[in-house]
Structure formats: C-alpha cells, structure tokens
Image (tube, rainbow, N blue to C red; front, side, top):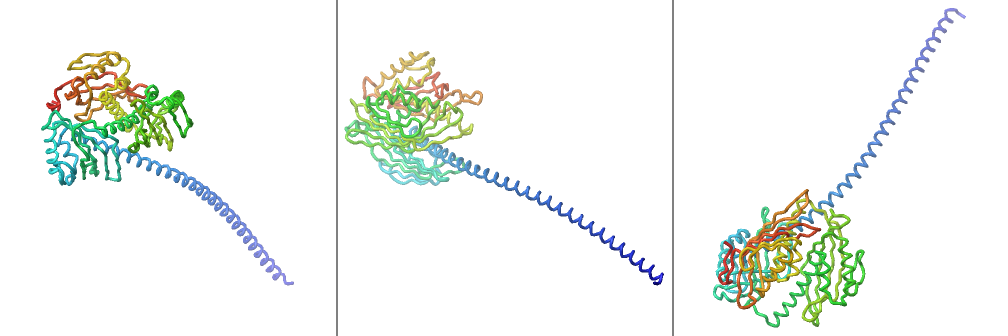
Length: 517
C-alpha cells in the first residue's frame, strides 16, 4: 500500500477520534447540567409546597379570627341595644318627672321641633303640633294644679329599633288643685312616647296622653281590690329584691307554712316543701353568689281566681360568683308565684323558679362604673321608697351598724350616731304620718368613690319632696322639702348607708307647697 495513503488514513482516524472524544466530553457536561437543574427545580418545588402549607395555616387562622370578630360584633350590638333601651327609659322617666315638677322649660328641650302631642280626655283634649303649641298646653295644665306627683304601677314597656324607640306605660298622677287645695285627686294615664335619635339625644316626636280615669282619692270596694292586687305585685317585687339582697330572714315571712318551691334547672333542681326546706335551698343559692341583681324582662302579669292571686314573669338575674369574682353571669327564669290571702295578708303558697337560659356577661370598666352608679341610685330610691311605705325593718336593713343620721330642722332635729338611735328616730317619724309620698325635685347626683380601680362607695345628693298625711287628723296633708345626702360604702357586694343628712329646708300645708328655693 502507498505509504502516503496510509499516513493520510492514520491522520483522518486521529481527527475522528479527537472529535468523538470532544463530543463525549461535551455530552457528559450537558447531563451534569441537567441533573443540577432538576435538583434546583425539586428544591424550588419543595419550597413552594412549604409556602402553600403555611398559607393554608394562615387562612385557617384568619377564618377563626373572623368568626370571633363576628361573635364580638353581635355581642356589642346586643349591649348597644340594651343600653339604648335604658337611655330611652331614663328619658321617659325624666319626662314624667318634669311634668311632676311642672317645669315647661325642661319639657320643651325633650321635643323634636315638629313633634305632636295627642291629648285625649279632659278640658285640654286635642292635637298639638310643634314645640310652642305643646309648651302652651303644658302651661295650661300646670295652671290647673298646685302640686303633682307620679308613679308607674308597673314597669314601662320599651322597644328600640335603629334610631326609633317607643315607650308605653300606665302612669298615675296624684295632684292638688288650685280650686280645691284640700282635695287630693288622681289621673290614671295610658301613656305613649315615640322617640327618635337625633345626634346623641333621644327626642320625642309623638306623644299620647290618654286619661283613662280620674277623680278624688277614695277607697271603694273596687279600689280596695285594686290595692290588694297592687300589694301582691309589690310583694312579688319585694320577693325578687330579697333574693337579690340575699336575705333569707326577709324571704321566709313571705311564705305560707306549707308552701312549695319547685326549682327547675341547675344544681339546685328539685321540689322543696315547707319553710325549712325552702329556707335551706335559698341559703345554698346565696352560698354560690357574692352579689345578685334582677329585673323583669317584661311587666309581670297578675290574675285572680277564687281569692288566690297568680303572678307570672320572665326575670333576669345578673350575678357574680364567689368562685369567679371578676366574672358577671346571667340567669333567665320563668317565674310563677301563687298567693293566698291569709288573715288579710298575701302569702306565697306555690313558687316555680324555672331556669330557661344562662350565660356569661363581660363588661368594660366604664360600663361597670355606670352599673355601680345605677346601683347607688337604686339604693337611694329604695331608701326613700322604704321611708314612703313606712317600713322600719326595710329602712334599717340599708344602714351599716355604726352609721350616723344628721336631722336638720323640724321636731326631730338632732344627730343620731348608732343603729338604735336611727331606728328610734324613724319610728317617731312614722308615728306622725298615716301616709307618705315622695318624688325627686330634680335628677339625683351620684359621685363614686374609686380606690385601686374598684368602687368602694359613693355619695348621692337630691332634692326630695315628701307629701305626708297626718296620723292625728287624716284630712290634713302637708309637704316636707328635704335636701338629702346619702353616703354609701360598698360592703360584701352591697351598698350600705354610712352617713345620712335629712335637711328640712321647708314644710307646711300642702295648699302652700312651692318649688325648692
């Protein structure tokens, strides 16, 4: 073979071998690069999966927080609705009190500019539109009467819907006329008030004053029957109040000896016969709660059959527990009380305490303070009411043992420095009068004492006018104007009076009664 040809072939083979070697090395590098790329993508995929799992956890957390937020919003709406009802009810009572103190200036500020007053019955019957016309008719009314007092025989009904609210109630006004100053008359009024929230104030847009009955105060058979019904209702409220103040000694005398208490729901569920068993279960109940308040969700209903009286009501109890003193609880009960007249006195023969709902209530600090202020007002009005009904035992339960009473003016003037002396002076006061009525000349002022974030007591000041009927001559009616000061101390969940000032700034025949000077 040609030597040159052989050499050429060898050169070609070497070139091909080099090319193949280079191609192999280049392919191996590509495989390595692909493997690295795959590893990188796997790492990124794992990172994406981890992020996805974290997002799912965050989404679940957000859903749970949203559920709690919605629950809190609903709770706040319920609290706002309840608070609005209290504000509207306070506006209604202020309205009636302004009528009682015959102050047309305060009345006119409660009306919307286009308000209407529908007056049904009596010489002022008609429809009055606008504040000026409404003020004029009230001034005519005040021109008929030298003095006015009022009370509601049963709790008013309040409904609130958005910015609108309605109050309906039976209101009895006791009055003395300029024409017949020695005669005391009454007006039984069916009252309707429509309010609308304008800015931050509930203003009256429509009012109905409907005179159902009127005349001089007398005691016919029907009126005696009415008084018995009222006494039964009063005893019912006293019964719930004695439960609220956790006083077994006051509860027990309200029962007939063989009475029955049926307790439905909760740890005390059962049937208890006889006063001893009933007293024992109430003591067990009081052992659970450090403080108790109550109100009737709707006005109680009263019926009579064969001389027995029946009271039915939905009663809500607000309580604080010894086990959880910072927690406020609520118990809703369907209540039934049966009374028999025993020797002219209504006594409980049958009672049902039926728990139909229970929950935990949470309050802000400001709302707790408002409740404490209301509790002070309640204690003050209870004190004046117990004086008005001349019930010495109820009056004295409100005092702390070493309390003091400063009586300024009148036959009983002096300083009384202990429980016994205070009891004696009230007994003297009650012996002077056959009957007593009262009202506040203006809304009482409340000052709370707060120490370490807790309410320790407070002071209530008010101008109180008492109307009294002489024991020695029941045809004589007089008035007593008192600048009242009550100092309270919060002890074991209850407000007790520690110091009291009864400042008699004016008194005389009812025909000469005048506003406070």
